[in-house]
Length: 161
Image (cartoon, rainbow, N blue to C red; front, side, top):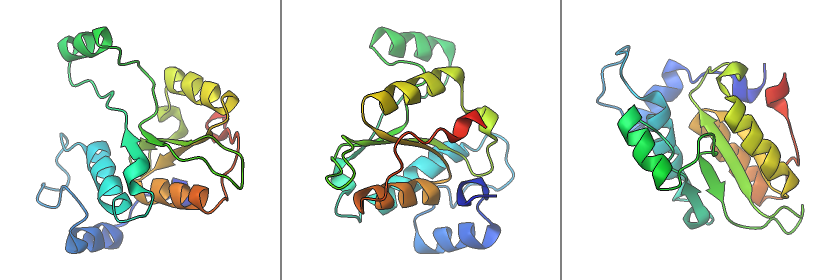
């Protein structure tokens, strides 16, 4: 089991709540309609904004709450499968143009990566991006930190497993 496969434990989640970086601290745990991926996304940006590179990290908002909103966003150019987070800063030591992360909730199975997401990630690898799919904000933050340190992994295709 890799770091990305490990779900966030209760102690880690409580530490995030205590530190004020868990955006859904007031949500009732166990409630089915709690948007954990959105909470992970928010937590990633709260912490990333404290990094020197935080201003270069952007989120591509392709969440679709319902069919009407999906249709409207598609007409505006939002594409299905586009990865969530983009770090627009070249890695001089590794030769990457930028880094891209698809963020999933902790414990999400490899099958949670859709075919459209796989296609986008494959395209981005060909374009010279450092790509990854991460389960939980800590894993995504670690990926971007390693990328900025020149430790990115080019063309890692873990989702094929």
